[in-house]
Length: 220
Image 1 (cartoon, rainbow, N blue to C red):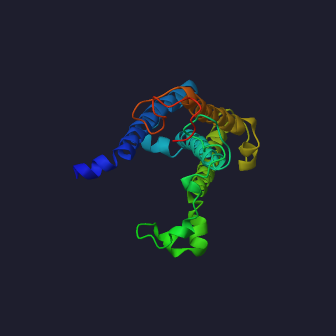
Image 2 (image 1 turned 45 degrees about the vertical axis):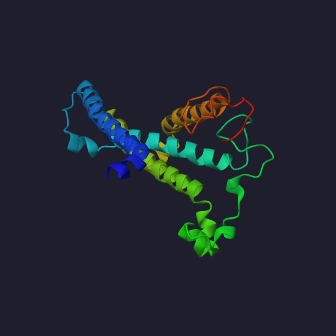
Image 3 (image 1 turned 90 degrees about the vertical axis):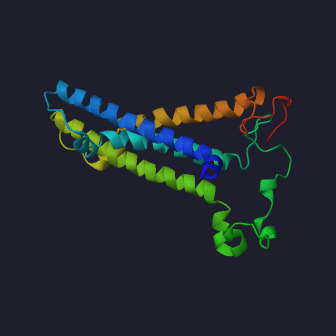
């Protein structure tokens, strides 16, 4: 059991952190929601009732959407764009191991099943990481749209405005403000990672070049 945990510790720790911060978001979100209700002379709600509103889901999916968009774009852009000196980049004018045709390894005993199967399954599998992030982004976008619409409609009713339609929300400045404020920060973060790793090091991290590596050494 300890070996199993050790071999998966990075994912396990990150998921524990995710759960801890998610619980924190829900608890503080409920407090914020009830504070807004109190300002309008409305009664406080319990957590179960809070989860039936759009408030927690808009915030949750809005952030997931930007994270998955960032990862989808980053995975796809790194297939053909470079940053000289960054460990996050391909090497200029070099054929990388990831460029190898998986069909040449169809008979390798430890190759994943799609590689050994070939055909359309392999064609899908060789692009599956980027496709997975695109799909997760689209699912989170739908969650943001639906959760945000529920909260938007509730706010409109609270302020004695007509109940809006979903298209009213999707074409509103509020929806796109919620999206753009997260999207821009994600791309700033990943650009910072790509560029700072050219000149800075983190010993023992696979996201960094070796401490002794020259600045213009690209890739890992």
